[in-house]
Image (cartoon, helix red, strand yellow):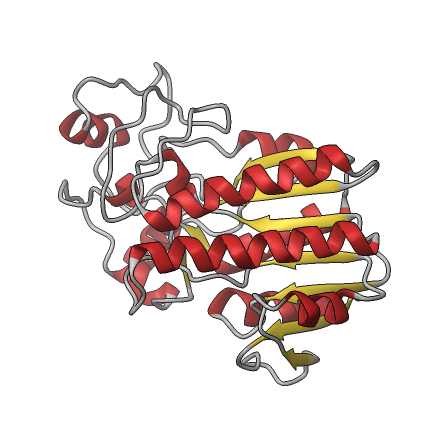
Length: 289
């Protein structure tokens, strides 16, 4: 397990609030940084403007690791696209550079599946399937572009700092944050109208577990992991679903009809992560009641 104080930026958000609690439960010493407190007040927290270099340097003093979530989470809010990009890159570069200066050698970054271009308000088809971490990035909005830029900055810091461990997690929409899991399960049906990420998802608990596993297994250099559920939130067989939306692409032969069209095999292989939540399985169990 990672020893020493873990800084959690964005600790007051939907993901950060749950992750902070899970870090404490797993025995980590945690300090949350945000402009609002975590939902669970048992998580220690400091009000911090993450774009302010002096504030970040003070907050990271004496820490052994950073999990960085604290950015504008999409392009749907009150900020103009250039503001989303400028603020996110300002915050991330400040946090990453402060970590390097202070000898905080383990950073886990919340990136996004939107870097691939198949998720988000504007989308393009993937180049090939199954989509894995080696798939080219093709960001289609300012938020996704900020994530690509921040991954690049983190990689640069890792290359210039001996022993520095940099991990980026790319994940789709997170259920049990913006909508309850039970509602997510109950509304599952066969349809062909969901084009944003073709109904891919990850459960909040599974995502937080991925962050903790990445934190607890640092490795010098840069790693990138997709973090997704094994299935998609659609009862249509994935082969038919892909054919209807992306007719020029084919799901590999033998792929399970309830399987995801994007791959999380790397994090399973390298860290031993495995998603516990399956919307298809939960829906089938609900149907038996």
